[in-house]
Image 1 (cartoon, rainbow, N blue to C red):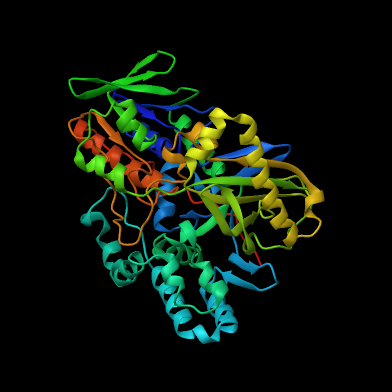
Image 2: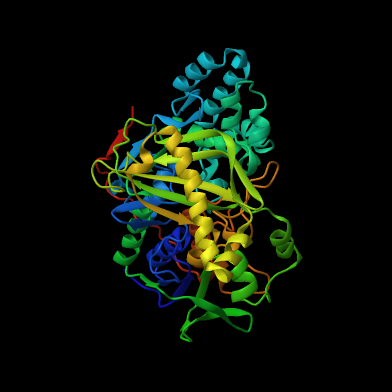
Length: 510
């Protein structure tokens, strides 16, 4: 690989930072990723407890279908053919504690049949929903960082989707659900925090799955992270874990490197931040390079909430259950002094053999809260009460699961609880947010500027640039950022050469 002698330092070893490093290395730069944690991934994380693995990120991967537009983007940063994908038959199963249930299928024809059988009184609204799913199943994501000359075919093909996209983007999931009289179908579209999310997020996810382009990769998010890191190191790039950046070094309004918490300084021709946006602007750069628009964004734009995750290692084979269950509770669970939940979700990982020993199952439940300060203050000021509160929430979750699966309590071998304090400690994500900017109805889906006013030789990538976040925000922000750097330096932007097509392992659950 020919190198151009220029060095790029990338702050943050999440998916955006690793993708940026791959693109930079392929384009002739020497890329070094600095990650404060002991492993890469950032929010795309999993961890091990007593023989079980618990996942906190991946529900589905846009681009899992060979030949799709985003599959080609993933091929630029990793050998995606090495992943094994599962296509779940059900998106989720909605349940009450009294035996009522509703299956939300990923195949739109099965979904329409199921919903019409359970809620014939909602036939018009159901057919409008499935029509939207079929329409958006044709939607194609334009190639990141390229304009009309490259994407014109995609833009023309997407024209028929634009009215549907605009309509769904301007209504919340909760309001969209009000058109259905069937209580479980109405509740599927969300309440509380997630009910405020733009309806487009849920409907387009169903569309991706219907098109076969939203599968789950065995091994979770870390399986993808390891592939991208492997690609980077094969190209000669470097990753340093346990390297916390304390300050971005600036001379004459140009970024010239970074200083680590250890005191070590690292010089660079370019600095890229794939770290938390708020910390980058207001801490690593001391708030010197911002304007009123940036301040307004961080003062007024809503972030995704934070969360607690209760993870259970269960000594039972639960493969007869759906992979995702959402239970409507008779009595709410109190998460913290400001938060109660009336609906609880369980992800039952029987479909991923890497997450538990044979005959056993990993189960996780994510509980959202915006009261991150309660948990961070407890962790810092009252560790004993912090542990007691974690145990209280875990007990409430186990009790809810016991009501669904009698006898499961006796089979639980390990319990793990992460809180907003855990998220902030390991990832530094502002407010413990699970992603970045919240997709509110009527909000803009356009990327935010990745440059800061008055600062040269610096750019940002990741979820704080792309509202909605998620794994695709990695390559979608990294690719145009490196392309722009190459243009400024007058060097060729050379994405990864297309890999030879290999057999693609795939399983569809019944």
